[in-house]
Amino acid sequence: MPVFSAYDGTQLAYHEKGEGEPLLCLPGGPMRASVYLGDLGGLTAHRRLILLDLRGTGDSAIPDDVSTYRCDRQTDDVEALREHLGLDQVDVLGHSAGGDLAALYAARHPKRIRTLVLVTPATLAVGGTFTDEDRREAAALRKDEPWYPAAETALREIAQGRAPSAGWEAIAPLTYGRWDTAAQEHRARSTEQKNLAASEAYYGEASFDPPATRAALAAVAAPVLVLAGAYDGGPSPARAAELAALFPHGVCQVQPGGGHFPWLDDPEWFARRVAGFLAQH
Image (cartoon, rainbow, N blue to C red):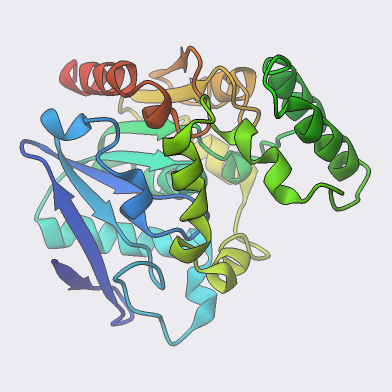
């Protein structure tokens, strides 16, 4: 397991899978160990995945200063990894909350980005939000599922500011395009893979300056793919398209039947689309 030193001396770990050109992968959660990404639906057949364990997660060390968990401050960790790998430019993939980190890195180091792939990304860094309506519309697409009534009730209670009477697990199936055994096992490992204290700090006060970030992203010359899941309410395909439009060369693709972890729902579709996009550039 390779490690490198961040700017403050914290030892950060990353995991390599596959062969070929490196693809630097930033996990979401926020602050979930990169192991949950797996091989990204078999993307390892096309690229060498560099799966970063963010500070305080997975095999990376816990920093002395907990304020360094903040999303904007972790862009320095990404830059330190690029330097460690000896790459002049990098292909970067960010998932979910890692999408905010990837966007901030691109905004601060636009010339270091060769290509950028944002998979069901969070959009807080650019001032985006996921509305209750987005979530309800996405949930309604699953109305024929046996678990839907409990999930719909839970969403309504959450929108009213209440904890769901059926528990937070009632909405877990909404996160996946298929609520099968693989999805349930993936979900069950979530808590043990996540640093909850770091998660709270990740989106700390003053993490973002959306107007400045949007302006900076308008100057990113690299090709950008924003990949949304048709069943994902956060972000919905419409929100993902809005994010893609912030980049001069941004495109949005929607995976049919995809949820928030689309590589689990249709691995072949996911790997083919991402690998195809990367191969074009």
